[in-house]
Image (cartoon, rainbow, N blue to C red; front, side):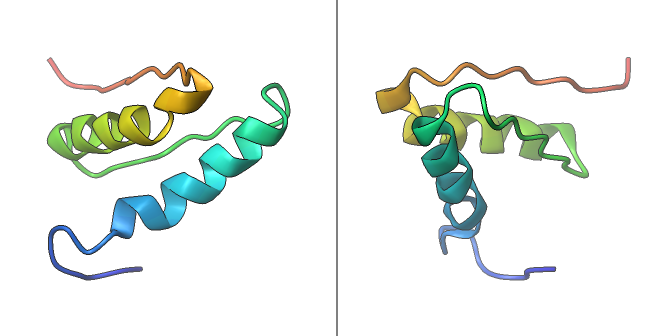
Length: 66
């Protein structure tokens, strides 16, 4: 569990290793990121898109609710 201020690199700390593995073998790894809120899911997806642009990352956001 991590608690740290906004902009401190928490998302990059887990996103970059996932993207590194994905760049090595595009079919060898998939990731599921669970978040407690819909807003956080969209924020994290945005960061994955920025970090994964060079490897043509494809993503999907699945949220529950109404």
